[in-house]
Image (cartoon, rainbow, N blue to C red):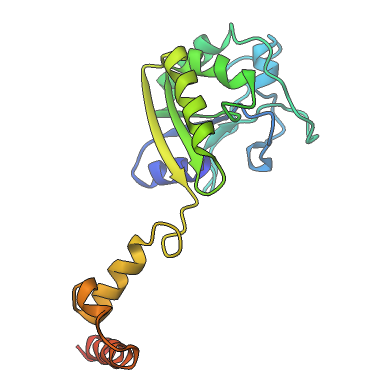
Length: 201
């Protein structure tokens, strides 16, 4: 999601730096052969040394760890992070940090305190109301400057259903309540007629 958001911002003309801070689920697309965030925080690399240049398909980025292995990485010391973030903020319009799950990692709590602005991602159908409430209470305690919410992987037809309803109204040219009073064969004929009329016109 972070890399796709970065791609969208780039198409709008913004410069973006994506920082992988999720040691739980490392993404191979961040890898560049450079030292990573863990090395920076340990004092083994500078803020510029860890940044891989943007490519046509990827933004400028920082991997969580420079090692090529897929082992989990714990972020142990964030004292150098605010200075690095301030430096990166002068180099890019947006600095997006990919954090681990808020309820599963103490790293996430530490990162929220350092970053100040959080976009919480909730996967539809996979996260319970109780987990959302726990995350909400935790964010109240951490008190970031701003909190946003993204509900991810919604099924627009079987889940919320809103696209299904809109498409029925568009295809039939009638309000949804009127559509469902029609026999199925008549609705199918009307839909076919509307499609053919649009194709000709």
